[in-house]
Length: 291
Image 1 (tube, helix red, strand yellow):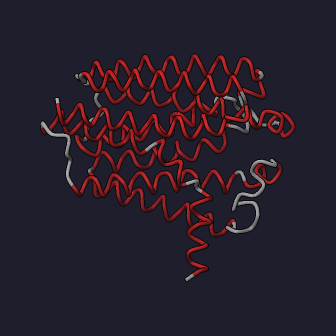
Image 2 (cartoon, rainbow, N blue to C red):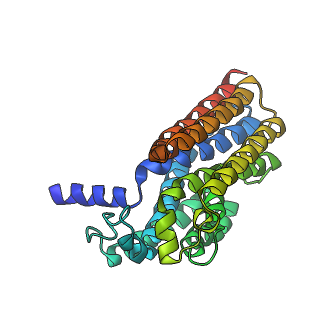
């Protein structure tokens, strides 16, 4: 039993399960807004809740597992990542492949039980999720690809509820793209020297720390603009507008933290962005249930 528990912990560390906090709020934001629009209520039912959670978990496990499998040689050469389970032997390459394939199949099966459009989209979604692992090897646009990967979450959420892709979810997703890409730029500052040494492509290694922080600020400004457009086109009300304001303030605080001390990148990356997603979800939920 102890070995099983330890193995579960190793796989949880492998995929950094705690970082699910970035994707989960936005898939459910899309689901409650779609349900409110379609059914007049934010509640979309127990079945879709279960399937939505399962789809999010399996898709993320597939993406992170594949990334760790592909990056095991790179991670071994980076002092920051050399103690990850994919490097130190706690999870073997064979076990990672089995994990990736099983989660990919599970994601497709979950999509099948949701609706036909979800099933059709499940295949290109997996391709996009896997592509991130390759981009850093030849293009510094990998940050955008990572953002695009997480931006698939709200699109998947609205497809699950309404089997459509309305304009408002595209606006929400574009905001997610630049939100994730913006904080990934800050996070990547930790590896600027290693990326240069290993010949990996990233905006920090290509343009330097100062320009990277400027790009991140621009990305997060774009984020706020598109989230504001999301609220407008989804007919949001006071709580949703307040959610955008809070997001803007929290992103500003994130940049303040990093500008003061690079050692606070982890705090800016995980704590601030984690709370941002949760608060955004809660305020949109209030909008859809009270007003």
